[in-house]
Structures are given as structure tokens and as C-alpha cells.
Length: 574
Image (spheres, rainbow, N blue to C red):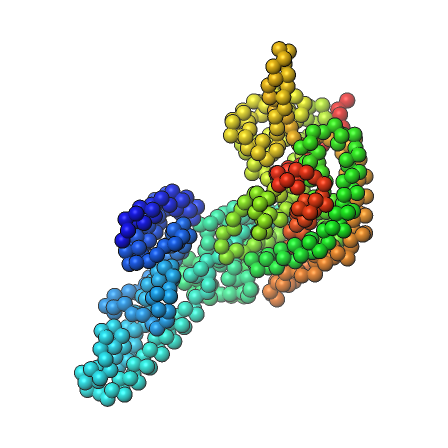
């Protein structure tokens, strides 16, 4: 073995430890997982395995080891028939297998040994003699004092029995037992039941997630769940009871089922492709109209007084708001949200989830144009502080988008502190900022805020004639009067006009609702079947406008992060 290759594996130790910690939430277990992963990789190298992509290879082994850990934690005791040597059913030649497939095959051999041990003597002895000890048929026939054709017949029968039993053994297990999927759950409504969504979504709770996935297509008994996952029913039962208590599952006789809609990766992919295609098809004519709406905003006196980045953020927010609200208007005409919380199991909130086969790569650069994340849109979010300074309230409106404002980027400030900080910079009351959150002045925090264009630098000449930089707010701030004009006049009229001119085009977004299992059709409101419809359309249309220069926002066109945010002041207090 090449020692350099072995040492190179250890370069990924820190990465593996972080990955293991994210799964186990236990440092000792994570260290053990990393050690086992590296040992397996070193053994593979010693056996001649070529590892072309060490990071992917090591991640695959670690994930497999973690799944083994989960199974060993919850599974029934296994009797090992160690007296039977390794046995391999005919299949891929060794040279055709990937390194990971070899590892999985080795771990399946215990099942093969157990099945061989359960064969009757006549079949077992010829199988062991021929395939394990390498005896030819005539030698076996001579030693057993039988005809060679009899040996051949017994051998073929034994092989077929082993193969059939092995396939039957694997059919007992659902995909979730050996290749668990990820599930991310959202809820909204009254959560008085205290549903710990963050607990369910924790990566170390794959058992909970895969029980929900298995029991989604049809109701299952505890026994069926136990057999499908390869986990003792004694461990499945308390998890199911917990999920029922949170209204994530419900009972039907002796069976249980997942009581909310799950949107699969395939359904997400189909919806994304559909939205993207409609955006490309209609972008040019839609942007001809959208630019007329945005030009009305550019004529406002408050817009003309803003710096270039403030103008860009206002236009970014306005474009998204008009498109998004027009889509919501058409959606409301097609779907009904009446009695959405009145469901069969009396839940006061409604859940939905996305199922993924693999982890999603969350990136926030405009150059990352191949995935759903780029077109994901959340919002509008609203942060309100009542009776602040000399105003009835101040409000922040913002969208979460890949190429702009994301709430995670306001750290270490929370949302209210972030809004207070923005107002302090706007009103030139910087002395208030240390009282809000002194960590704002940390160099890394300021650099991050500048990176996402929340703040910028402006040269301010002092009395000596020397210039120095001061922090300025790049998020536009509107007076109460300007807010009323923007929302109640320009936005309102623009949305109605857009819906009228592109009604049939927007209706096309809602022609492919998600199909739900028959037993859930009365439980899940129709509008939730359209949850995925138009999810990517707004941002896909925005990018089409920017890339083709139909959207006249230079910062957006030049791939700079543009916060889709505005701050609005309330009425002045008397």
C-alpha cells in the first residue's frame, strides 16, 4: 500500500468529525465513527482499491457505518453462524464492483452464511464442498458415494434455495432500512400540542423520519414497520406513539399512517422544471409590463434621493412583491384554504414535508444556477417594532432569496436588533448601536454585512479636510406617506394589472398538483396539493429578466447580492 495515500486519508479527519457530529450529536460516538471509517478505507487501500475521490468515498463509508449504528442500536439480536466460511452468491465480478459495493456485499454475507446453515444436510454439504472448499463434482460424488448427476442436481437446488431465501430476506426490508431518506417537516397554525419540529428534523432522528416516510403511502401495522426497517417493534412503538401525540401520525384500526403531505424529491424536480420552463417562455412579455410598474417607482421623489444600492434593493423587493402577490392572487382563485385546520384528527396545525434521498447543497451565489435553492423564495417576512423613537412603528419587509437577504446573515443580531441597528444608521444615531448589540462592531460582522450589501462605506470629510469612511445603510427607508403610495397605489394597481394581462399564463403554474394517497384525500385540503406549484417561478422569472437585461437593475444584472428588503416608518407621534 502507498503510505502517502494512507496519510492523505487523514487530511479529511476534521471534515469527517464534523459530519459524524452532525449525525450523532455525541463526540465520543463521532470519534468512533471516524476511526471505523478510516480503518475501513485503509483496509480497502491495502486490498488494492483505488480511491479516486477520497471525500466522497469516506463520506459514503461514514454514512453506511452510521446506518449500521442505528440498526445495531434498535435491531433484534442477531445469531451469527460463524462456523460457515464466507460465501458469495454469483453476481458481479469483483473487478466490476465499486469499493462501497464491496463493503455492502461483505456485510450481507452473514445473511448468506445463516441461510446455508439452515439448509438440509444433503444440500448443505455439496454447497460447502464445491463453492467453499473448491471440490469438483466427481470428487464429491466419490466421497458421498452418490452419482455425479445427483451431486449436480443437489448443487443446483441448493443454489436456487439460497438465492430465493436471500431475496425473500431482503424483500422483508424496505429501502429505508438500508438507505434511509431525509425528511424535513414544516408546520403552521396553532402549535399548542408542542410539536418539536426541530427535534423531528434533527439528522440523528432518521428512524422517526423514515417511519413517517414508510407510513405515508399506506397505513401500516407496527409489525410491518418493524419488519420493513429491520428494527424491533419494542423500539418502534414508543416512537410511533410520540409521533401520534404530535399529530404527525394517526391510527386506523391496528394500523398507523402519516397524517400530512410529503413532497418527494421527484415532485420537487418536476415542479421546478415546470416553473422554469414557464418563466423562460413568458419572461420577455412579462418583463415589458413589469418594467412599466417599476418605472412608476423610479419616478418617486424618495427613490431619486436614495443611493444606488438603496435604489437596487427597493426595485428588487418591488419586482419580487408584484410577481409573488400576483401568483398568490391566481392561486387563491384556484385553491381554497377554507377550514384548513379542521381535519379528521382534530389537529390545530397543519404540517407538510419534503423528502430527500441525499443532503441538499445550500449555496447562496448567483453563479450556482443548476439547483432548486437558487429559485427558492420565502416571505415576505415582516418585522415590526411598535412605538419606536418618534414613530407609531417601524417595519422591515424582506424576502429570503438565494442572491440577497437571508435571515441567517443578520447574526449576531436577532431580527428586532437588526431593524434597530438599521434605523440607528439611517437616523445617524450610531451611539445607540452598542446598546443594541456591541458585537455589531466586530470586523467579521461588518465585513459580512458589507458582503450582503446591508451596509456600505461613504467618505465623510472632516473639518481638517481629511476624508474618512463612515458606515451607511444600503437598505431603503420609506416615510409613512411613501409607504402608503407604494403599497396602496403602485403595488395594488400593478398586481391587478399583471393578473389581468397574464391570467392564463399564471394559471398554467397550477396544472400539476401533487397526488396524495387515497387514505389522505379527505384529510389534506386541496390547496396543500398545490404547495409546490409556482414555488420556483417568481425567482426564475426574476433571473430571466436580469440575465437578458429586460430587468433594469444593474446590481441584479451584475450578479451582486441585492437584499430584497425595505424599511417603512409609521406615522410620527404627536
